[in-house]
Length: 494
Image (cartoon, rainbow, N blue to C red; front, side):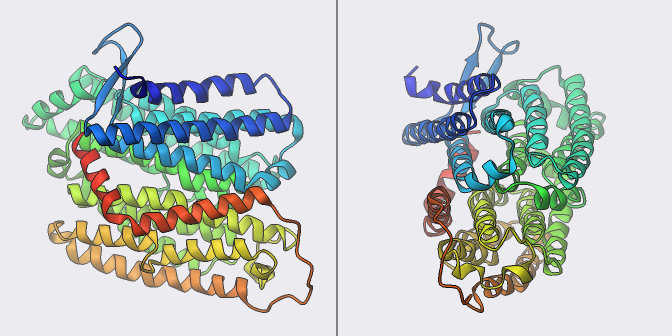
């Protein structure tokens, strides 16, 4: 096997090894830059793997350890997995850079090593959820990612962050229990945990009318469990509190990456394990469509009334995740492909908004209320422009990634049968609602130029992060067709 095909495993191993070493308590700066370098190396290695696997137009299984299937553990590499791994690793690196100043201000120097341990474990979890070929390994790293994410929420070690962490932990445990019950039930029905064997067993059970209710229950439990963890409406109440009290890096990682990992695992379940034909026949996707539609609308409505900039962005995340679940709920290959594109664009756009908002808050005395941030973009013009790029993308202005994502969902909805009118109407309504809170916020940030001439000291790491995240948003918008072609081919090779 070519060495490049070992890169997915090596990236996972590097993240976990670095987490073990950082737990030994190195100095704060060394721990931070180690985490940055690890995520950057994983991004470069994942990109190299993506180029190789896209050129060969194939997918392969990598057996870990001495024991072959069905006893051993496997990861599977293909174009879609490589694309997710590249984006997740790159965005993790940029989240670390963008929130560097606030991270060192909010986190005790003695705890920085442990904070970086959690960030490395989050990245390891995301990579495993992208590559896994074993449903139980997926569950294990769902739990690892949950524990690490809870630690990221309470990095500030204050009353509000601890309360938000406890709320997040309780809901995540509920989601974990539901997902595990679904896995156990599926194992009892099939006797398998590896996805290739599960696919054949599920196909056989789907034709047995006596087993179909249990199969539907298993899929429903796993879907609901992952939905709780990824803030699917109505399981979203933990998200605004967790975001509003966390440090900038934590908010960007939680919103841009953590909730996406669970959605990626759901893609594997729907497409690789159960297949979309079986998902539609079990009618689980209909419930997902309704909940995604509700989240898309009600999340935006709630954001309109929010005056705290980070809580507004958190409610926006609820709405944007509604697009993802609505795409899954369509139950078509086109809808799932559009949902995958939405995962990618939101992975760039939401960290861009949080990093920009964190910088605008920092130059305004760390105020978070929109009224107190009036004119703050003049103090940090690049952050103001970054917020503008992210906001316009969320609204769905042409040439930005958000417009491409909504276009893909609209095209995917055309094959959605009775759901066409609801999907297209929901996309139009949600775009209007997005404009009703993003555009006023953007105008507020650029209005009334402050009288003082002096500007705050430059933050070069934040500048680099904003520029690259904005470039990602624009690149996805301009390269919609080749990226969608890669996603579609990746789904076919799952």
